[in-house]
Length: 395
Image (cartoon, rainbow, N blue to C red; front, side, top):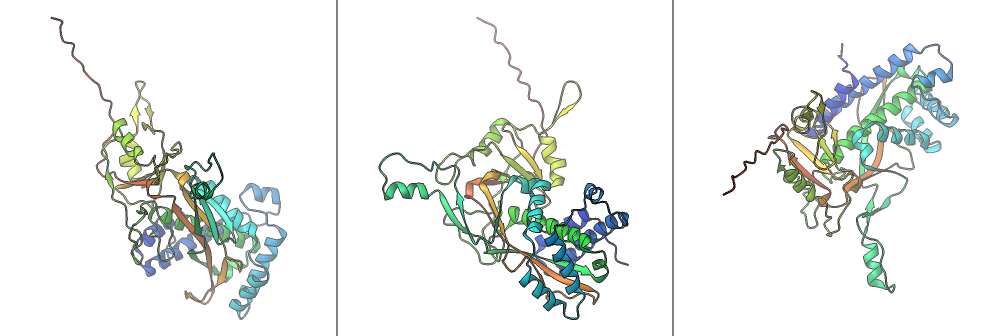
């Protein structure tokens, strides 16, 4: 009997597998991850068997389907039971397409339930293939006569980026027995899987993305003008700055490295964030930013410059990223022929149907100064410094 881990454990294992780049390990971790989700959703539906009150179902987290969504899932179930499921599903996607409301709901859950993604400039771009990225730190106006020079100065604050140059894919495994639970179950499973798989892929990409071979560009990558890009390893990883304390002079010098863009403009940093591994938060970041008060209680998140701390397993232990979230952009879109297709690329037991979900995405910091990589392996706990200034007797 295969042991099925809970969703959080399997999600962490999937992140670690992705970091290795080993396809076999990734596929195995993805299968365990999906089994955990399927088990979780199935248990919820088993507890709600016989419950027909839509209001009560909604209160218990079961989303009510629109007529278009229900029709889509019913036809999906029908196609999965045919003798030629691949062709039947291809026909379904070609005629119906996945309802946009499904993806819109997934996008909303992504930003609502994941701290890192809620900080990022996250944009659903639909079917667009290009997007203009605006440098919010640039003063995009000019006084004087309108001429080519002024127009060039104003438009220089924009960058055109490709949306469909990167693709995030995941497999959806659906056992035939699962189809018998109906459209609501299939919807809950698909939405949960899409949301969590995309979140894992995006978080890892935002932190570590190489910028080549379909990956977005991560915050830990050097993207300064003139940087040499390797076809296999992508953009080079930034050199980590060793940090041993978060005292005002130390922390101020770190923040000073990101307050100016590469063009020399000052950027706002009132949404400063620090991403770290959960283990490092407990053993490094929390002790370095927490102090005991005179009444015995503790005050945490003490930084000389207001900073939100975000925990993510995508960050390696011993490292952290200090960055301005508003200057990192993620655009997600989907192909017009649908975001889910039947796939024969990955083989399973005969009683399991395999589907592949794909989303087009792009992600990058506006420039190289948006984020700095920190080495926090020697970060010391916070302690109160008392200055003892001796008075020199007069005369």
